[in-house]
Structure formats: C-alpha cells, structure tokens
Image 1 (tube, helix red, strand yellow):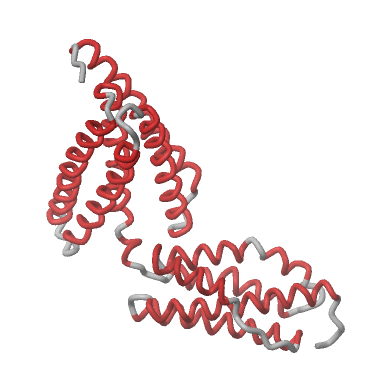
Image 2 (image 1 turned 90 degrees about the horizontal axis):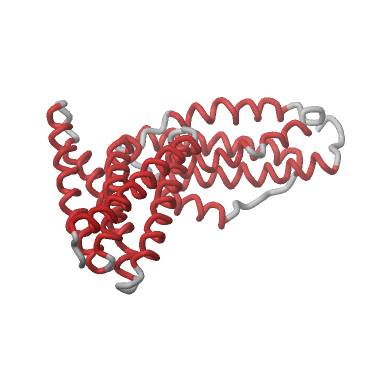
Length: 293
C-alpha cells in the first residue's frame, strides 16, 4: 500500500471484500447444479474473477473473511426455483446499485478503477453468455399465461354476475380452463411442428403448464369463499391477476433485461379491461335472457 487509507475508504473496502468473496462462492455453488458445460465454465470463470477481486481487497485490509452464508443460501434457492440466470442477474443488479461506492475510492485506491471496469463490462458480458433452457421457452410461458389471464379473467367476471354462486362459477371456470389448456398446448405443439422444430413437445408443455397454473390460481378464490361471496371472490381474483402479472413482468425484466413498467401496465390494462367488459356482458345476458340461477 503506497499510502495510508482513510477510515471511510477502508470501511468500503471491507464491505466490497466481503461481497466479492460471497459472490464468488455463489457462482461456484450454482455452477455445481447448472445445466450445460458452457454454463458451468462461465460460472466458474466468474467465481475465479470475484475471488481475485477479494484477494486484491484483502491485500489492503489484511483480513481473512468468510462468505455470508445467508446470502449464499438465498441465491442458491432463487437459482433452484427461478433459474440461475434470474438469480445471478438479480444479484448483479444489486451490485450495480453499489457501484457509486467505487467513486470514493478512485483517489485513494488506483486498482478500484480496474475492478469497477471489469465488474461493469466483463462480468455483464459473461452473464449474457449464459444459456438457460427455461429462458428459451419464456415465449411459450408468456403465451400460455397471457392467454389464460385474458380468457379466464373475462369468463370468470362474466360468470360472476350471471351465476352469482361461487361453486357454479368455479365449476364452469375449471371445465373451461382445463379444456382451454389442452387446446392451447395442442395448438402450440402443431405450430412448433409446422415450423420443423424438434422441441415441439417441450414447447407445448411449457405453454400448457403456465396456462394450467394460471387457471388454478384464478379459480382459487371461488373455491375458498362461500356461495354468496361471489363479489369478494371476483375482487380477490382480480388482485391475483395483478400479482401474477407483476411477478412475471418482474421476472422477465430481470432475466431478460426488459423494462418492467410498460409490460406490467400493458398486460394489466388488457386483463382488467376484458374482465370489466365481460362483467357487464354477464349482467346484460342475465337480464335479456331471463336466466336466474
């Protein structure tokens, strides 16, 4: 060290040293279960670079540290559930929010400029090289989920006033939802086959599963609430719709680097708009057809 570091700079270095070591372990742990040899190589390379950064900061602090076990466990679980691309890019986004800390070190630690450049450019480039199967089928998942949201939200809203009974609404929605699941999955299969794709079955599976999960979540309030509480069930269903859209939009925004707000607002406007329109269709159908269930 060429000169004595200020107390503020030393504290920042300690935090970054801890972060680099923890992230190195996270990359290493995820590499053990990530699919694809190229993905494993990329993750191990990232782990080595983070460890190298740790060693640089260690030369300034002289302190041997241990990784943060809770953070390692958190990102391992996220990688298992949502995929390693999502987990690692989420971690990288958190790291970006801390990049301004480097500015305070530039005058005191010359190496901080090089580390910052590598963090911003090289590691991002390596993360973009990751090729995860589930992200290849995001389009199929969006197709299934979006179609289920629009169709079933509208249908359940229409059924709500027309039938005014949660059990009847749930039964109708379930029958329609399961039928539509098979219809959507088979359509995706035939479309993929006509394009000469070898992954037709896998693609239709992602579409079908996304559709079926959405159906189950939207019908749930009608199954849990009393027969007379159909309006409460309707608002609970709409809340679930918004939560599903928010969750999936956030996932896509992190995993694929797309903007969250436009996608969320667009999907919400379509789904809620169709629900409102269908609700009034249900009112009119009940009135003019004279059906009283």
